[in-house]
Image 1 (cartoon, rainbow, N blue to C red):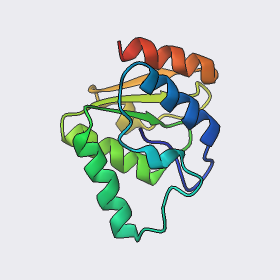
Image 2 (tube, one colour):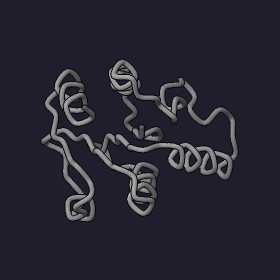
Image 3 (cartoon, helix red, strand yellow):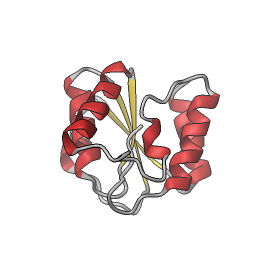
Length: 126
């Protein structure tokens, strides 16, 4: 699961989304996105290593993309290049990168609120 961490982080939304995904029997390989301090005091190199190793273990990347994030974008690119399924969630009023919109293997779901996002991700992951 990828969510913006450096700016405009919505920890409550991320927690609710993770709970719903785990409730469907899926494993979250990036649990640190739910922590108060997701960097865990790691160096930048260790953060990159941790994040990419989690993606390697994953079958699907669920990414919240309403707020631009370099890190989330890198994780999406890594997932696409490694033939992982990518599901992006975004609010309908947020702008969408042409690169994400134009990549056929990326599924983009527009959600109205947290409840709607959970409903959409639940349908998509069935």
